[in-house]
Amino acid sequence: MTANQGIKPVTCEVNEKGHLQIGGCDLVELADKYSTPLYVYDEQTIRTIAKEYKDAFKDYPNIKMLYAAKAFMTKAICKILSSEGFGFDVVSGGEIYTAYKAGVDMSSCLFNGNNKSVEELEMALNLGVGKISVDNFLELALLNQIAFSKGKKIDILLRITPGIECHTHEYIQTGHLDSKFGFDLSQVDEAIELILDEYENLNLIGLHAHIGSQIFETQIYYDEVGVILKEISRIREKFGLELHTINLGGGLGIKYTDSDVPPSVKEIAEKITSSVDYHSKKYNTGGISIFIEPGRSIVGTSGVTLYTVGSSKQVPNGKKYIAVDGGMADNPRPSLYQAVYTTQVANKPNAALSQTVTLAGRFCESGDILIKNVKMPDLEEGDVICVYDTGAYGYSMSSNYNRVLKPAAVLVNNGQSDIIINRESYEDLISCDMVPERLN
Image (cartoon, rainbow, N blue to C red; front, top):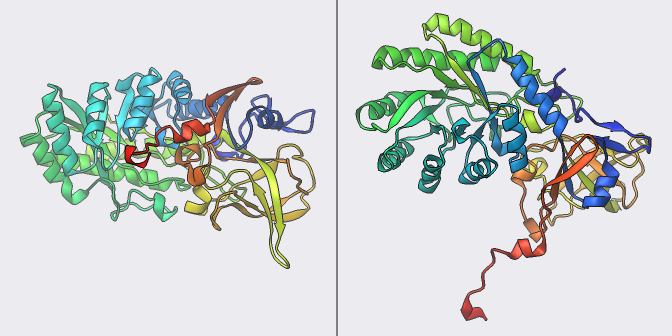
């Protein structure tokens, strides 16, 4: 079993006090020291899954792991994954800048996204981002113009929509034909003609596709490789252009609840490499270099969120609501995707599950519900709730809705806890506010 197939971080256990601990750190003590809501990341789990990816693909030499930074990106995370040999799939100027300030080798970064701004493209070239995945015709023209103005030639991949749908939430499907991302296969020839005939500052090296997120299927990766290599073969035959790089995106799912059965990293690796071997021979595409972009599966299981129990409400002949001190602003996924999580009470994890409750957030929305109809022990004000598998798309999608401050994040390892994101202050909250002089 690989780390993405477990609900809890690999170091999670119950300590001698009867409390949950992760990375050798008592979660109740962390909540007391840093306050809640609190994001907690286990360094050992992050490094474990990173090593599992490298080990799963070790027999295929021409492969590079790019961490999908949108899942969760801080300078500390950059340091950890850089040390594990990962590059970075970045999708904004902010992610590029974070990687740069963390000391990342920017040549190991690939800039992806469907509507990159001129300023972001200029930043990417100025800071030495290694490759850009071009999404559309406007971007081709803009990037060539910017590269020309700087006297540079930039390596690019064309992002394509391969026409493959995975069985996941429709909002996180990205590889099917009706998608905002990438060139339709019918548009590829026009793009290549522009690159070859007009855009002399663009060097096309390969194709990029991404088929979705939270994927539990394996055959879909096999099929994706076949579509891309068939297209590379067709491009070679028509244009005499040899492309040897493919970016398969990421999307491997993780286990949020007992009913989730994601494939292991090894299973995905076997599907991808066997498909590359088979289709490379079938289409005579030669040695292929592969990029993989895991994000959620790297940090999802490594992170938990701690909340403190507050008020409760028993609806007559209805639900019992237990309110916590966070919710949809620090984790919008339940509201956005109807995501479901697993939880325990950190200060009494072994207590009998005596009631069914709905964990409600503190925000002024009826839809601010973290977990519906979950079995819990008797709960009191001040109990510490641990919600598992919140390491991906919690903080990165968080907001200041209701002008509530964003939580802190800590990294734990071998009994040590360190702040990696400071808790916002009220001064931070209003730091960008401006009052026109005429209102004073």
